[in-house]
Length: 130
Image 1 (cartoon, rainbow, N blue to C red):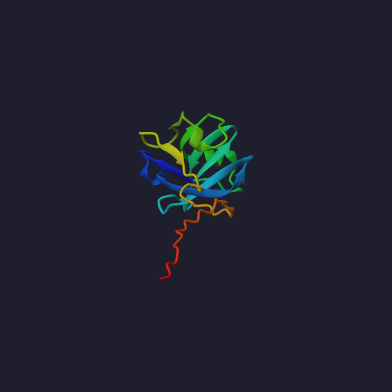
Image 2: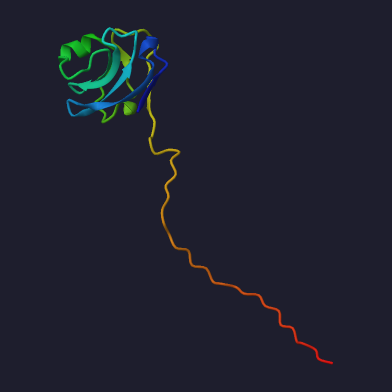
């Protein structure tokens, strides 16, 4: 999951879910009524990351590039590692892209055995007979 925030082109802001792989890297997609395709994508093409309203398998690289709002010529493994976003056809300011770790906040139950010494406290009483 990637979160885009702070973009001047506010339609690009939101939560993007993993949407398969394109050009050897995970691509992300977010539904958007403000996009002509119905979605915004974070997609890598030609060693460049794009936040674009094109990013389907059938979209050519030129379509992804020309439909992009923001881009980075950084060839990072994932878009949250990019620190050099710049304007393509979007509006300033440039966005921040962060990742949410899906494992945060999830408890894991693991079976285990705990051995502890047993301590028994006893009091001894003598029975008195008269």
